[in-house]
Length: 294
Figure 1 (tube, rainbow, N blue to C red):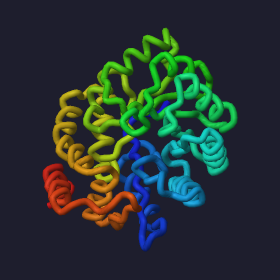
Figure 2 (figure 1 turned 180 degrees about the vertical axis):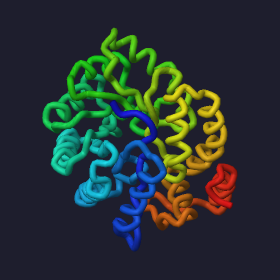
Figure 3 (figure 1 turned 90 degrees about the vertical axis):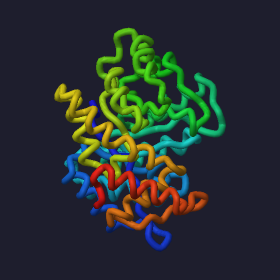
Figure 4 (figure 1 turned 45 degrees about the vertical axis):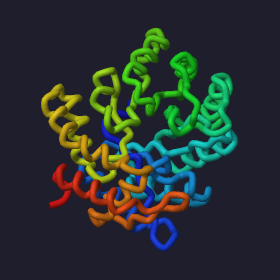
């Protein structure tokens, strides 16, 4: 089972291309800082503006650099089932441990359509599948009942839950009727990561962990160790940082933060743009408050 702090990795760019050197160095830094695993090519990794070749390149670089030291859940989401299957097959060939597959966005499938989409990735992709349920971005919301049906398939192993509904893990467990013991519940919302753990969660796929990997990993570890006081102390320290990472559309703020740490350029691809001066100040202030900058 996947657990702990998994950064939803940014994709560094330089001169319009993937910055491989910065990306490799970022991965090594994360391992040194105690990160529990990685998720390349998700929303934070700007997968919508990566070409198919770049998407595969980023996945391959991540797997090659990590070399089995931490688990990798490769982004393989698409609103085209055929494309999602293709990306999942590539992730398997490249050596990923699992794939993260978002609920199909824009075309608004029914619950039956979502079930068929994920079953196809399950049947043809060849890797464990983490469902990514994020209604604010995809417009559709997978119900607990649909997720419970999918969880009966042996390679549907968990969910990244970005609903911000803290009752959802419990309702989903109830819908699974005793079948949730091996199902992994990962938060997709940094701000509610600790309450999500209290609701039965196992970890967080995090934006903030890109720039505060040790703090985020230590917070998750404190919960697993039963040190609730330390866990809450770290969450309170991180809260202004969580807010700052979404002062504008992600990944603009977190890429600016990574630049302030000297990890990569802040370049984003259109239609994303550089964040405002006001937002830059909010990001810097939050980083100073969290002890990431002097």
